[in-house]
Image 1 (tube, rainbow, N blue to C red):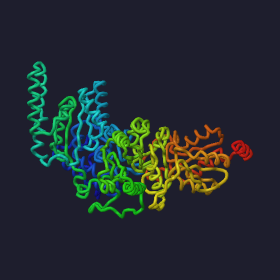
Image 2: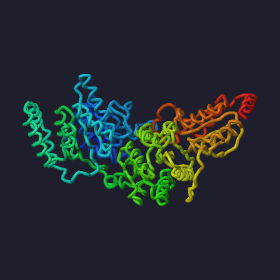
Image 3: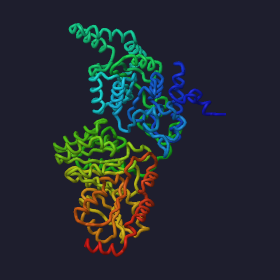
Image 4: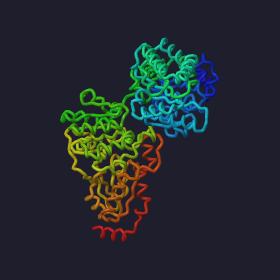
Length: 635
């Protein structure tokens, strides 16, 4: 007996949206129920993103039912909410591989499916991308609908408003759907509101509005009076006309879990040309009580009990994020000028405790990384000490502010950069592969790269004491379990530390790759140095290492191009030191999802990979007489 078919009899017949469009409207609720249950069953076994997807089941079903996908374009913001989209677009039977090595991506990828029209791991890009697609369709004279779905959190970003402003101004044929799941809309969202919206978007009212607009254009005074009258009436029964002022035909809010209303409303809006805005209200975690009660907890989850919602025992090993969280609270007690800033990543960046214990100095600026840095710059101008907690991948979005607003003015701002290096299951869009490269070239920026948890705490303290722009970068997850000291020690600026003494090779390790470098060195009789700083470098020690070894090896969890190794190369060149140098780091390509350990091995940054790269290097087999001659010249 095929138990899967028995449990999901209708869903198992839907292999792509064309199958879905063969269903009757009366069957759509069953499709939603089976999709939601299938999603919970799958994620409970393998982990992944859950709450957001549970909230978009009805919306996803309605979109693929009403619109002719993939010819019509549906652009999702990020991908947390798009698991139902994957289920209904031919990837149902692969969902159990999501975020696994070689499996489906946890986000949207254009090369994974023709239904993934735009790939994104960062938020607030959907409206801009959809607008571009709508204009492209117009340029090519294609009759195509384009829909952007954006969340109430993502729409807080400046980029979303830039796109709305542009779309309304150019009268583009695009539909923007605001998926509001923060419960900020009043409870009277329901049948009456749904009826009003269906009425306002229906063919009769729409045709009257469009016809009246044309007729009244020849009578400006009457037209302006009619417009004011319409806004006054709508203002009494519908939310603010903000989006209509931006040039959009506004509809909503409606219940985003009412499949019948969604289908009717989308069909009505499909017949209207120009920029349209549909506001729907949904509930994160819909249909799974534990996720409804704790949507943040069930945003990204490990495997859990399908019946109770309970997770397995949580590891007691401290993460680097935990180290930062405790340090920030401890430092805030010592210095009342400290303020903590996050661009909507309170939980991920470890600011929950700080937000509770120092609420008056905690600032969540929403998904607005550019604003976060300039906001910090303004505070620094007038005597506060801002600590901006931000993921490496999100810092990329605020690069101009980093340079123009902080560095040029030499302001006292500290960056605590989480998720540096590879991030595992989240894949290429979230990997912190570039921060050393783009930070190293910025004047006034001091860059710390801790090798373990204890050193991370001391470096956070040291960076805070420094007057000027500083950055401490640390990876996702746990380290070696180094016990942190309560009393913090300031590390002298630009000083490295020799942790193992050898003869032929010197390995210069930057950050948490140090344990792998040490293990590799044991088979090579190599010197190992914990460089600690990417900028400034310990030039005195590098000179000494060059004089005592046949060649140097740099190791970092950052792209080789422009990274820490490049900094060593530049120092050697400027000092006139000629020594063979091998730079090991992340390759010149994007790294797909998998476990952090497997990805490091794939990139040759585990102990075996480092040892192999060194022994296979032509420098390792260099003639001893040439080596002696070169060392003498360096000395």
